[in-house]
Length: 136
Image 1 (spheres, rainbow, N blue to C red):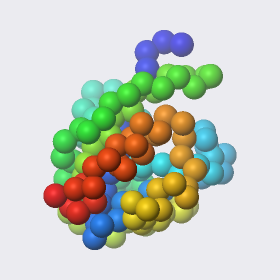
Image 2 (cartoon, rainbow, N blue to C red):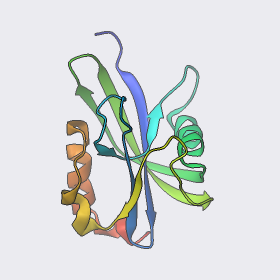
Image 3 (tube, helix red, strand yellow):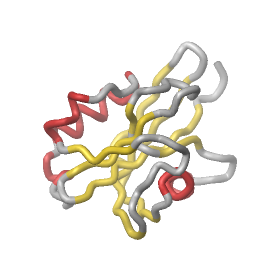
Image 4 (cartoon, rainbow, N blue to C red):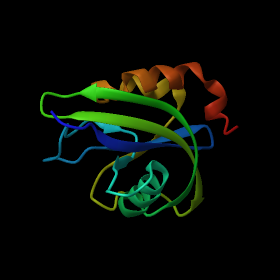
């Protein structure tokens, strides 16, 4: 399988809601919801990757804060190492620049969306950390 693919994902909270995006048709895991982000390019830190990806995908500038979870997940065709970061929105209103749907959801709505299996541990953490939703 080779080296795991480094992926950074952002947890962007605003007014008690969390931003999620839907994977577009034709992509890996199409139709599932996820936390926005993407694969790191060579020589990029996870934080730089996340800032670039969120700017490209959503047209926003974020301040990347602490990493709250890193996990590895093996799909049949690849292994990903996912790092989740809390982010502050600095500039811009998120919009799906690549045609992806976006949604702001509250903690009670998390269970109503289908996420990739790799995100299950992060979803549990989001349930357990109510202070994150309050923007602390």
